[in-house]
Each structure stands twice: as C-alpha cells, then as structure tokens.
Image (cartoon, rainbow over all chains, first blue to last red; front, side, top):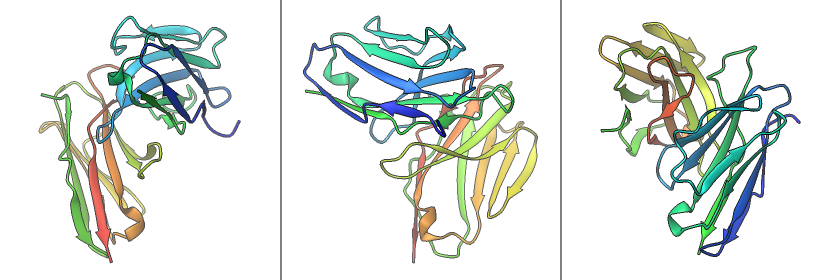
Length: 115
Length: 111
C-alpha cells in the first residue's frame, strides 16, 4: 500500500478483555515501530522490529503487552486483560533501510478506550 | 526528568510572524534529530531532520542544532494559520536507532 495502515481505527474494550491491533507497514520497509500516545503527550516507544526480529521491547509496560511480526511484514500488538490505563492511541510506524532508518512514517493509529 | 524536553505551550503567534520552537535533550552522544508535525486527531508527519551542528533550511522551515548545548530548535517563517499544530521533537539518543519523542509544543497561528 501507499502508506502505513492500521486497524481498527477505534477499539472499545471492557476492562479485562484482550485486544489485537494490526499494522501493515509500507511495502519493503524493514523497520517497524510501535508507540503509545496518551492524550496531550508525545509518543512513547513500545517496541521495534527489524524484519521479523524483535530487537527491542524495552518500552512494553507490562507482560500483558505482546507484539509479533512473524513474516517480517504485518505486525500485531496484543494487549491481554486490558486495564483503564491502557487507554491511548497506539501508533505504528515503519522506515526504510534505503533511506534513513530513523525517519518514521506513521499510520493513522488505533484509539483504544478501555471502559 | 524526561530525556527530550519541550515546552508544552501553547505558543501563539500572529500570521506572518516567525515561530520559534525549542527542544533540549539529555544524551550528549545523540546524533540524529527530527521535527514532526501533528495536527489534532492525526498522526505525526516528519518535516525536518538534522544531523550536524548549524542550520538546515527547507522552505519556510529552519532547523538549528547545537550539540554542545544539547539544543535543537525549529523556526517557521511567515507563519500561516495552517501551521497551527503540535510540533514534536524526536532524538535518537546515544547510538540508538529508535527516536525518543518530547511531549510536543502546541503552536497557534492567529490571523
């Protein structure tokens, strides 16, 4: 696709439910990042993939958060037993090895509301 | 103390004026610096990158970097109401390839 695609755009979950957020990066981009953005704050790093390898997951806030990218393309961020503090916009970004790995192209985000 | 600091604002400037946005960072070994623009309800969009001390100009935007002072800024000349947005500073701290973002500065350009 032309850009980074994320789905769903909005997700409402009851506390304790599991959710899965999908990211389809720009075709050919080897690097994929997940960030969490709370209202009025900047994006906070969650995890980073290079192809299918998860090279950094230091930003995942708890073991309820899990991310995968099994074939080096589409990635899924899974949150188990959601809590109210998980409510935020989850942003996925990708970057190209041909350009600059740190120049990120963001998707539209998934806004998660936990009730 | 956050590793990338920005004043949250809002910064209000009249149309046609120069808007000056500032950012400081904690890691002296950082090499890559970015400015993203984020409109309300939208995702961040990269507008400038800078890697060397000095100024880098792109249209109405100028990024300024001073590594000795650990300071990076963004100047927007001839500000337009369409420039009203939150501007996020991002720094790849130390030798990392992972940008760390500040909280952003809200800019309001009024006619």
